[in-house]
Amino acid sequence: MKDLIAQSLKYQDGKVQVLDQYLLPHQEVWHVCQTVSEMQGLINNLQVRGAPLIGLAATLLVAYLAEQGGSQQELGQAIDDLEATRPTAVNLKHCMDRLRAVVNDERYVESVVAVAEQLFEEDIALCERIAEHGVELVNTGDNILTHCNTGALATAGIGTALGVIYQAAQRHGNIHVWVDETRPLLQGGRLTAYELARWQIPYTLLCDSMAASLMAAGKVDKIFVGADRVAANGDFANKVGTYNLAVLAHFHQIPFYVVAPKTTFDPLCASGQDIEIEQRSALEVTGVSGSFGDCQWAPKQADVYNPAFDVTPAKLVTGWVFDSGVYTRPAFSAL
Ligand code: MRU
Image 1 (cartoon, rainbow, N blue to C red):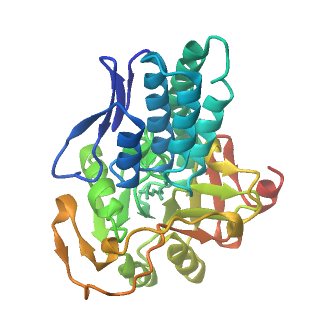
Image 2: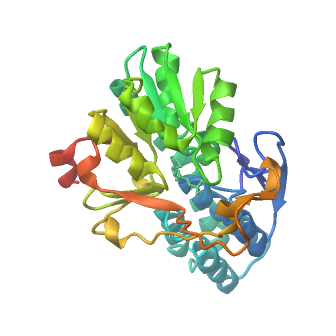
């Protein structure tokens, strides 16, 4: 496989390497990943995260295993096992399906490697096209609110919602970003803040619960968020807390855009009700651990609700920004 290099994932020197997103922003640690169980652990622990990136990381690992002499049966099993790591983002399934389609080829090693290279390069191009469309929605001086992390860390390219913001800052300048910290795992406070700082785009961090008063004060012009799965009717799943923002945006009449590549669209999923939502460990809510400290503040036996994602109904979406263009409701239904 040729060298493939992104912000948080690379294939270089014959090795699959991932930047540990759980340790960012204070530690930049790269892991070499050689086995399915290592990759499953990295994805489950959100060391590798973001809908496009988990698909690509799993894909590079399968291609690596093929090059290492893995049999067709072993690769088929690896594809199934990797697909099972996180259920909500359809990008992972999309990548695994593309590999499944070639794993029984006679020259399967070449085919698997070719698919891996294509998917990686395709993701870079999809991000570019999304940004080209999304940038048309942004005006100089805009204050844009975003949630979770949808930047270069979460894709092979410049990102999705954050890619639009990056492109707008390059093209128009004078963009300010409100960054939701994104409880419980703080992808906004840790990762989006880290990326915006590196890109020198002015931002202000807030706790998720502060978004309502910010909107009421007239300080948010637009909202751009990413997606883990967009259903055929336009409902979409994204990091938990996105639905709150959509309801608030509707009440305050603030444009609310969802930004995603075509690999996040799932035409086989009729509506948001059909999207499986991943439930995560209580420990993420009862306290913190890892690079952001190690402390449990809730009573040990506390009962906890911890869905990783929520579903925003299509009726709350102003526009869907895809690599093929910006769609509003009537146009979206025709997709
Ligand atoms: O649990 P995470 O951090 O993987 O969740 C990520 C999100 O919800 C993102 O908004 C989504 O995957 C889009 S990333 C381009």
